[in-house]
Amino acid sequence: MYSKDISKKVHSSYVLKAQKGQFTGCLAPFGYKKDPEDKNRLLVDEETAPVVRQIFGYALDGHGPNYIRRRLEEEKHPCPTWWNRKRGHRNIRTKWEKKDPENGRYVWDFSVIKEILMNPVYTGSIASQKTEYRFKIGTIRDKKPEDWIVVEGTHEPLVDKKDFAIVQEKLKSRQRPGKSGEINLFAGLIKCGECGKALTIRTTHEKFPKRIFSCKTYNAYGKQHCTQHRVEFDTLYSLVLNKIRECATAALTDSETVAGRLTDTCQTEQKDQREAMERTLAKDEERIEVLEKMVLRLYEDMVAGRITEENFNLLLEKTQKEQAELKAKVEEGRKRLADEIRLAVDARQWVESIQEYRDITELDASTLNRLMKEIVVHETIDSDKTRHISIEIHFNLKPIPEVEQVTG
Image (cartoon, rainbow, N blue to C red):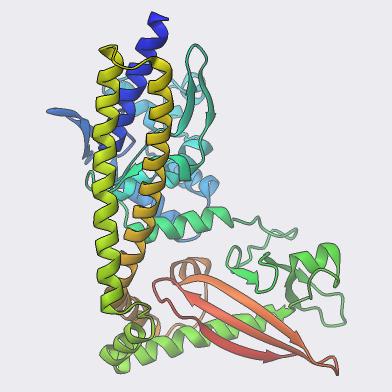
């Protein structure tokens, strides 16, 4: 009983630290180091931070963890285990180091790179309570990201939040090369506007074969579940290339007008509505502070014997549930508010980034992944079987899509 009580006290203290945005891990994440004067605070590690930025740079270019792992090995960047051993934090060697003491340090594990790419710590946030813990059992399962305790703005970021969000989308939609080994430039970008599945690429068996995209659901289950949404690769390639050049030319011709039009078009809330959102957020944040104080008082009451452990657990569960709901509400509200405030900035940033592509003559995966968020294909079929394809081209940063029509 004594050990169980101690375990609960320790866990409660970690939860409180997590809610305050304090780092409680044994080792700082790769790219950071602990502040010598405050072990719960992270500082940028100037020796390893450039490697983290390089990893995210590769990911933004559309490359996956395996590609990044090979590049890091070729460029001879030591893995995190080697750095921890060098600095005296751990005395562990990877299986590659044991096999080849000289070169094994440069071999990175796939999972390590994926963990780095998915860790919000690199945006300046502390994400804690990622696992489910039980007394005497220990960690029993990983929690879903939406159940983590995340506190933003706790330390200097290594990656912009927009870039981090883009990388998360790329990781979710990674696709392998086709059977011929040829890389699909639009992998992870092109989707069906009806069922939401990816459009897969294949070569037709016609006299003059063509590379076409078609809906994954249609390919697997037939027209009862979705239509083909057929788009020829060359047609899509030309549309996207021309649209990039068109947007770049418009941005160069009159950047202020373009940016202003984007801002006006995307203004979804009026001033009084934003002010109402701010008042609601302030009220919810005040309530969160009250609940945090309540948790401390409850704990003190239990230790002093003023309430039973059973009542403490019931009240704690109820309080933490309300905390979680309020924090989720506040986080969503802050995100909506930040999105609106950021509209003008995003519009000008998009205008500046697109300008350099006015004279682009060919597409590559790196350019597409940096510029595009997704390409959505819609299809309607007339009574005479004429197919009409509408293609939405969604740019990163730019909140309204460019639409092209294709009749098949």
